[in-house]
Amino acid sequence: MTSERIAVLNIEGKTIELPVLAPTHGNDCVDIRALGGKAGVFTYDSGFLSTASCKSSITYIDGDKGELLYRGYPIEQLAEQCNFLEVAYLLKNGELPTATQKTDFENTIRRHTLVHDQLTRFYNGFRRDAHPMAVMTGVVGALSAFYHDAMNFSAVGHRDMSFNRIIAKLPTIVAMAYKYNSGLPFMYPRNDLGYVENFMYMMFGIPCEEYRPNPVLARALDVIFILHADHEQNASTSTVRLAGSSGANPFACIAAGIACLWGPAHGGANEACLKMLEEIGDASRVGEFIKRAKDKNDPFKLMGFGHRVYKNFDPRAKLMRKVCREVLTELGLENDRLFKLALALEKIALEDEYFIEKKLYPNVDFYSGIVQKAIGIPTSMFTCIFALARTAGWMAQWEEMLTDPEYKIGRPRQLYIGAARRDVMPLEKR
Image 1 (spheres, rainbow, N blue to C red):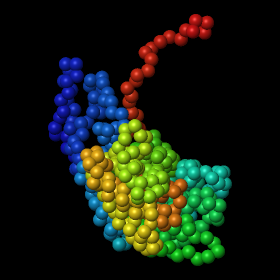
Image 2 (cartoon, helix red, strand yellow; image 1 turned 90 degrees about the horizontal axis):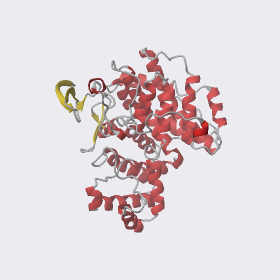
Image 3 (tube, helix red, strand yellow; image 1 turned 120 degrees about the vertical axis):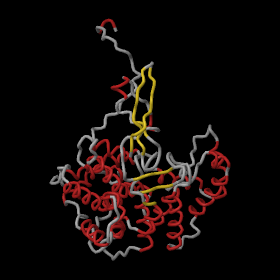
Image 4 (tube, helix red, strand yellow; image 1 turned 60 degrees about the horizontal axis):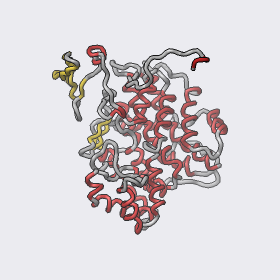
């Protein structure tokens, strides 16, 4: 990254010079940090459409090309050749693990999957019908009350311990949220199972019979985890960074990220997409709903199409479509009604001039809901699965922020449009 060039601004006759930073990929960035001091003005960018909030070497998205890179590696290669823990290791450390490092890391994660026994009683404070994301937000936030022996975040060892703990414990916490919501007994983790297989055991196993994870379904879930592990500076990742910039412990930061992810415009999109497919009901009604999606006066939105960043086919959607076929074939659901409906909807949308012009391509949420439902995961748990996977990226982003030499507490400015200064009148004159 260089700053040899400058941008020249003329503000009320005053010339301001600002350095231009060149990234590895993507748009150049004008460094405006000195703008307030030099010119007495701020920039206004609602929704951060044109603002880089940080320097990062973790994830890169090229929306026009439909490209997603983790530490420089294409998501397609990682999904085909690696498992989730290898990707988590990559996000944190910047390089894929060697065979020895992979084994050591997986063994370390296995040793941290149990949660404190008192934490299991924390679930009893929630109603049985509470949304699992509400439960997750509370339980993850409470982890700092149980694991406060590694809170010196300037120490590498303490950051590593925090990373390992939260990556290991999230599957246990998510599975317990599902069991509690279902009224079923908790299943404790097994150290003889892999990361995803262990999660499936805790989700679907019961004490009175043996449970053996289906390897095809386990691999499908593993791919879902990889595809959702990180996605640049989205709303929840920015939330984790902003919370972490105050020095808050990582458990609190991840809880904040989970709360943000719960929003239907963010992590809840796959749940909304599946509900939309259920609403359409049959392929014969696709044309009717396509017409509604085009109508500006109709509030109906075609969920699972388009993305804030991608202006091309979401690369994760292509992978998820393949996984969807594999899962349905394994389960004998090749003629699944929702899958056929999704294919019909995708075909029309990809051929329709309206969607082509607006670049409304299928995104990862379009197929992930069908896959998860086929595996046996209820709709209410979809965003929990998303959060489980995204925690790897959140923790990598949290550590990157803390170790940045330019790290400062986040403090956005504002464009104040309220009342001008005024004086309080005595009560009898108001």
